[in-house]
Image (cartoon, rainbow, N blue to C red; front, top):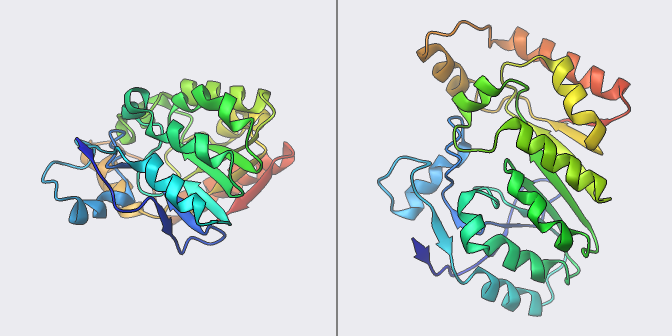
Amino acid sequence: RKIHSRSILTRTNIKGIDYCLNPYVGCRHACRYCYATFMKKFSGHDDAWGAFVDVKANAADLLKRDLRRGRSGHVIISSVTDPYQPAEATYKITRACMELLVQSDLKVSVLTKSGLISRDIDLFKRARDLDVGLTITTDREPMRELFEPGASPLSARIEALKALHDAGLRTYVFIGPILPMDPMNLAEMVAPHAGRVLIDRMNYPWKVRRIYEARGLSYALGDDYLEETEARLSGRLRRLGIDTEII
C-alpha cells in the first residue's frame, strides 16, 4: 500500500552513520533471520514479516525539504528495509531519492540484496561521495533459498557487484549473518569485485540455528563453526588483497 510518511532522513546511532533513509516499510525479501521484524510494532500490520510493503509515496518530497535545511554527514540506504526490493522496480522511490542525494553534500552508502541496484549506476556515478554494497551471506544457492527466499539469487548479486565495480564505483560486500558456506569459495567469488568486505559476527544465531534444525538439516552452527568460518573467510580475503573488517 502507499503511505505518506512524516519523515525520511532519520537520525541513527549506527557507528559512523548520521542518518538512515528507508524508502519502504517492510520487505518482500522475507529473510528468515531479519532483525527488522520489530517494525511490525509500529506499522500496524498483522501480516507475517515479508508479506507486506508500505511505499513511502512522499519520500522524495520529504527529502527535498530536509536537504534544503542543509543536512550534512553520512546517510545509509537502508537500515530496516531493502531499497531495491521488488517494489522498487515499480515505484522507483529509491531512485527518486537518489536523484536528490547525488546533488547533495551527504556521503551516501547503499546496501541491498538485490541485483536491481545496477539499474541506478548512472546516478551513482554522479555522486560526490558514495559507496555501494551487496549483502552476500553464503556461496550456496540452497542456503540462500532457505534463509532469503525473496531476495535475488547469488548469481544476480555477484553480477550486480561486478557491474558496479566495473563502472568505477566504490563497492563493498557485507557478510552477515554467517550462513553455512565454503568460506574459501565465497572469498574467491566476491574478491574480484569488492573494494572491501565487512563480516558481521552472526547477530541472530538462535534464529538461524532454529530455522536450520527445524528442517531436519544437520550442521554445526555453534561458536566453533562461527570462529573457524570467520577466520578462514577473513584470512583468505586478506590474502587476496581485500580490506576486511570484522564488526
